[in-house]
Image (cartoon, rainbow, N blue to C red; front, side):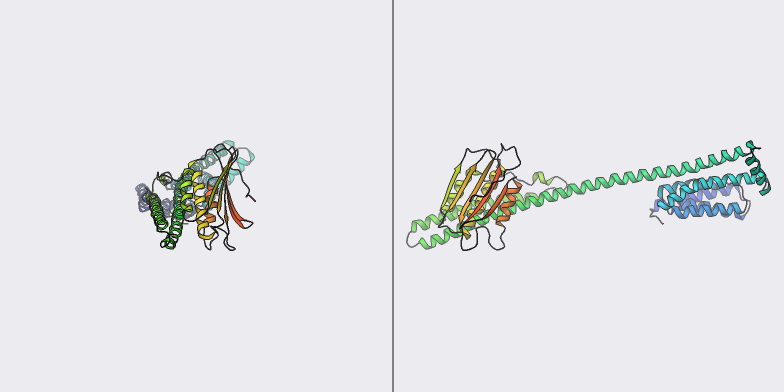
Amino acid sequence: MIRSLSRPQLLVDAVMAVIALLARTVLGYDGAVAFWMTVGMAGALFLRRLSPGIALGLAWCTVAVQLSASLPPDIANAAVLPVLFATAAYGSRTVRWAGLASVPIGALIATVYVLFLQSGGFDGLTSLVLQIRTGEAFQAGAPGVIGFVSAAALFGLSWVLGLLVATWRTARDGRAALRSAAAEQADARREVAVEQERTRIARDMHDVVAHSLAVVIAQADGGRYARAADPEAANEAFRTIASTARSALADVRVLLGQLRANDDADPGSDRSDRSVVAAPQPTLDDLDRLIDQLRASGLMIERIASGPTAALGPGQQLVIYRIVQESLTNVLRHGDSAIGVRIGFSWEAHAVILTVDSGLRGSRPVGAAPHGHGLDGMRERAVLAGGSFEAGEVGDRFVVCLTLPTLTASLPHTRGAMPA
């Protein structure tokens, strides 16, 4: 395995290998084998970070040449320590375990080799081993045990230090990955918040434009028909058109301002907190104006209420207003205005139930225009406000039913049934 290193890292490793080679050259060589052994160790020192596996293999090959030539231990053998360090710090799982296995094996070979050289060859080593086995020369075997333990400790310490470095690097990378994931999650949350806000603005834009255009079309048709017979009624229709258009234009400007604020927001900040531009939003007090506006367009609307009124938040009031607006606009476009519309508020202990009861035109219910999203938009508004929404045919009428929890509710929301 060849690791990717930067040029400064490669330069540092090359300089260290050259320094080690020159330092050993100052001491001189006893032969060509000693020189090439030093070159091999210097090469292993250079390759230790670039390829720990190749460096370990080169070090073992160099040691094998040294043993075959019966060369004494050399200062160049110290390069084994950084190589063992590198196998644990930078090597793969296989190379790391190979480095660990090299610790006891290398310590044993080094100890036996030193004893071999001290005893004068194979004959002396065999005699020493026999004495140690029979217990006749404990003091003769004690240096070997001490040498083995010392070599194993030295080799093992190098490997353990490399493992600690690898563990620290893994922990650092893990912390960096967590920080990166947290940053990506924050970005994703901001993007979701902005997308939700844009969806809300698009919903409001649909409600404002669809309602206003429906009123304008109805008034324009009525004024055109009444122009000859009742000029005053035509003038009133035109006044309603102008008033509705001005109101719609003001609402559209507010919504466009909100959208522009989202686009101009600083990407590095929490746009979800700035996405809602402070602007007046319709409340329950604005329902009378809405109903009067649609009554002027020819709808017969009856508003009834039962039970003591409870407190609702601004968001809940906006949901009620938009659902009533969407429902009445759908009646004006698709329903039977001659049958009339009943808007009912039932105030209960912990919830308010809104019903919009309207007529059907043919077999198509109000809000079910082809490819429309009216009912889906109303349902989404209700769910986001913590309530429930149902819509469907009841006999020959179409009923929209919204249930919202009041501010005094102790439960998340109370689900209401559609009236029969």
